[in-house]
Image (cartoon, rainbow, N blue to C red):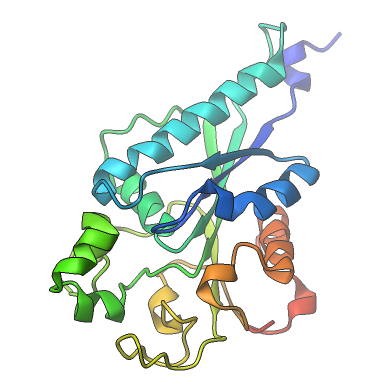
Length: 247
């Protein structure tokens, strides 16, 4: 008879990382959809306004450990079960993408060989920084409200974001284009989602980029965005029904 290791199915785990000033509750709709599709979901919370981004990236490491624990739980009492194929994907919103990039930029994190990083979908990521941060970071109340992590999201070519690499996996980006200019905030290049310009969402190595008529805050909960997240994690492309680059 074939041994149990040969028969062991890989554990498909998805880690969710929310944005600045939000909590894991903002990702609950996505978590529900992904669990319904059979994924193990780790909806990771983190104190986005009280720690710097490198420190916050330890939460990514914690979530990966939780995926490993889920793999062991799936193996159950069978100690011969093969854990060499723990597949981990990510879905991030806004600053969550920066935490993910920061995690992979840190060589001190141990990444066991039995973990395979599969795919990622980045929702409204400020990959190239935020023009709002550029114009607001010198104001005392901005750091009070957003912490050092928020201040690090500027667009300076010698800033923190510019030092980060891309992602060592297949990934797609979904950018919102629904917002008009908000005269209460610094001017953003059009098009944008109210907080992040479309041009800022791009990151070298992306395999797909989708623009959607959704404001920044609502990207994780929008039904069609969620559908495309699931489709990309399964297929490595956004749904053909979406059309070329827009929804």
